[in-house]
Image (cartoon, rainbow, N blue to C red; front, side):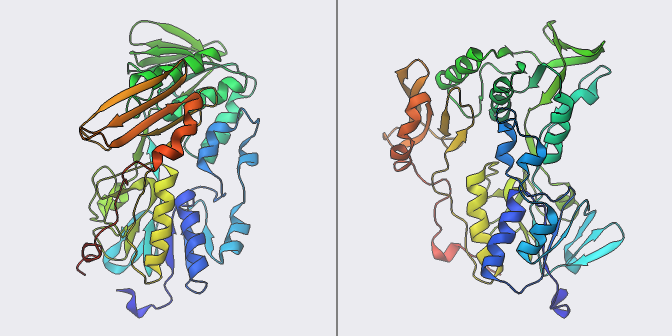
Length: 398
């Protein structure tokens, strides 16, 4: 164990919203403990939700990036190792390996996020399919899109719809292909989904719901996409927005418990002492929520835990604001397995959908258009996503 190395740093793997915000919050509470951040990318600080607003605002990757790694290291009084890949976790010896180099830690936080799900596609143009999951991805796509006109988006979930709105406002033609009957099927009942669809169609979006992309081939300077229902679509670029999967491989190889994400308790501690997980890669009490609000709740709680004040994470209501300005949308989906039914009021694209349990209690909502103004009043009626724990249960019996 590292008790013999009292100067071992707090090591955070990842410099996205989770890693950098935790580093900031930890430094606010503890200015002394050595702090090391390790990232596979260039360590620029940026807000990931802004990636789906760049075309409408005409911002390239540099304009979306806020601070490069050097100034971040000074600001945080930390060492930041960029373009560095951790190859193995070694919790038994409280260290991680970067190739052949062991890096000791006092505590380790896994904040390395989620990766894009890749769909298998035949044809000779796989290199024209762009996932957009970080600032480097965005930069690559933005460069490839220069001078092009037609974008095909795979996926009609939250990310696909946000990118569609952004690209349409940026002057592109957009087709969306997804094997579902409606937009955002995991988040929305049919009526609000139809309202968002009408909004995007008013900007020129074309939807192909049901089929999947089977083959993508070069056709002169352009591409031809063949769908599973036989349709052929011409396009210049493809954005893959079919979803994200928490990164769990290194954790699993090191013997940490994993499910959909890396399993953590309410202190965000994994199944092994001194190893924590935060953000998109973490599954907290069975919940893996890929949004900013739960991530920030985790940041505040974990920073306190890491300075010796064990603080269980709690989530209040966690509404999700979807960036489709053509049809504003705020949704707070009911918890998985909730009993109840949806009720939809309103007309046109201004809809208030509420999900109530058999006893009439509000368990979720979806608001579109002008109805989003009602979100604050509704939030007050919602149950918390992760309620506060009775004090006795809040700590592991360690």
